[in-house]
Amino acid sequence: MAEMSTTSTLPERLQLHGSDHPGMVLVSAPLNGNNYLNWSFGVKRALRAKMKLGFIDGTSVKPNANDPHFEQWIRVDNMVTTWILNSISKDIVEAFMYTKSSRNLWQDLEQCYSECNGPQMYQLQREISSMLQGNSSLSTYFTNMKRLWDEMAELKPTPQYTCNGCKCGTWKAVPDSAAFTQLMQFFMGLNDAFVNVRHQLLVMDPVLSINRAYSMVQSVEKQKQIQMKIADTTEHTILHVRGDGKSDRRRNVADRRIQYCTHCQRNGHNRDSCFKLHGTPDW
Image (tube, rainbow, N blue to C red; front, side, top):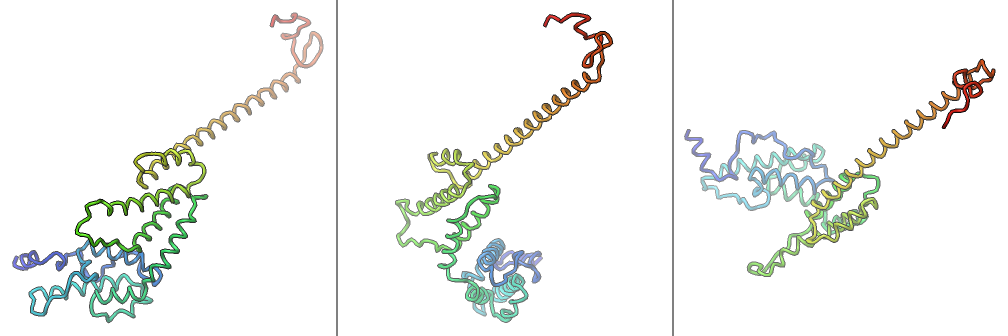
């Protein structure tokens, strides 16, 4: 009971729960030296969920040795270090086994595998600018485009405002401008099959969010798919009916060829339908 009381008085960042064990892996894909950007984003997200992000970004500072939380801080820091090491490929993890703290480990990994943002941003921008839907489905095209946008956003530096609280609202225009750019990039890469809906969405006021625009274009794609299925079914039915009609006519011709009239002694009809015997019908 006393142990539970002690744990409950600790700050959340210094608490370890039953699921927090040394064998835990933070991300599904380990760091292999070439995937640092995505890997680091996943690790930070996992640590943020556990209230442990401060150990690697420097905001959770190591207390003095006489601080009552000193030993617990060391314990949690060792746990975070172990989690990160577990999330590194076996081919490269040996180089970081003796790092003294999770903060030092994170800084070492960043220095070794984080490329300069400039070349990465240039390459990402080239991929975004040249991306076309082509033979891809709409969902695949949008997913690939969104992945590039997210990577670009992760690399871009966050604007720093030196004024004492923005009152003119200029800070709101930064994300709005980025969202509008993404919308234009998405529309530019769409196939010509969506030219009509693209024009309709471009003239809407206010401008749609990228997610809303994707949803509406996706609805049009589904309608086109349904119409194509209906058209294919109708065409198949028509061809089937035409085929049956031709078969019936062939059977009628064949039937007439084997018929024989005993009255006029001719082929092609029988006695019951003989015009010479019964006269011409009033058609």
